[in-house]
Image (cartoon, rainbow over all chains, first blue to last red; front, side, top):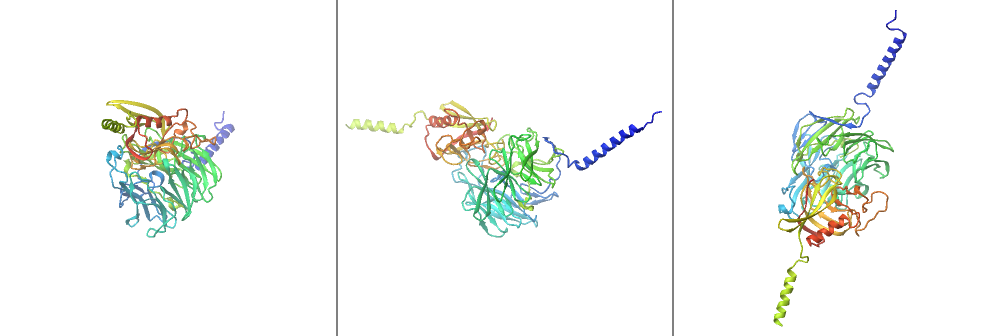
Length: 394
Length: 191
């Protein structure tokens, strides 16, 4: 008579049990949010109920709990696009500074200025910065100003225009100024007026752009008033959480460098077109958590792994081009582990006006995204930037 | 003598009223957005009522097809006035350049500082000091990428840039340089 569970069978069972236990242990360590992130397509479904943080849209500020608060004016990134966040929260979490645009002349995108009888020098609009606080007060921070960044102590940097109005046939030039607190006086940190956009604080330094001919972007750093130095030709993807490093992108979007902000020295470099897997380009305004950086990419999103001296392309997450023809902007890690990413996705219109925006919340391990409700692109549906809560930030 | 003087004055008056180029056609450009590095720039001139001539070149714009991305996306669609033209522009963009009006994209973001140009020096030459991508050197198809401007090739002889430049002057008979405005000089549309 054969034993049903003989020695061999016992050994086999033990092997299976050991294997199962090991598998469970591995699953425990690399569970749903610890598994190895893999490159591949993102599956997007509708049904994002609650965005991962406060959101602005039109003249509303929506807190994470779904409460709508009335803003004093509609948000707009007319002068900054995605170069700088449209709304930024102060480091104490009590205030939100936001960009607005007062249209002085209705401009038809399809027509030239001459077709609309817009003469050289005609005032087209006025950018302004406003602040909304947690008591509901909403007030003008500065007229003829845009691109705000809060320092950890409550000081705020922004660009103040030489002429408050943006005019046809003129470049919008101004100075980077710092206001020690919202009721203080402005101190110019630049000395030459130019077309600037403030990007973020990195500790006590301000990183900002000078926009040149052909929209050439030059990233500059101000160590203090009048102490300006160039950091890189190109744009910024993100500042490290300790505010000592910045990931910068070349003009053509194919090479990423990690720079030491204090010295400008290069710490790491990567050509994304020759990385594995390769991507055609990356874009600016991403996010950095721990040793991971996320950036918009030609195919959707790219996640980089950064060490003290190396930079690697860890994961490429592709979006269905027919669904999201121009990809996403301003992706941001929304968890400490760097597994969840929120981003804005715009859909261009068939004609030159219209278009819609969505918020996406993606799990880069499961490669799934939840999509929020569409909003008209001109309402600037965006997450409120909260990076001022860290050492470096907007 | 009085008759001769009168005839001479009449001839002079007629001469002065004739355009420098008797064949001055209404001339403009169209940019058909097809891809960032393989779109089409077409010069159109009207040589009679209902009669048009065209000449087209490969051209590029932007790195992305999102026209609302400053310094990264291609040009927004619509009509553009020309704000100036230079033969020896000296800056981040150099040489033969055509300066376009500002334009808002579909979400209201203003695109500014935009040109039609190529990669050449202020002296209209090539400066290729490195094995990499030099800003005043046309190395190849990759150079069609831009931060938003329309770019045409500077390769070969005559280069597309020269054909665009000389074609503009030749067809329009407009030889102005510096800041000036020409209404509806460019129309940008989807491919």
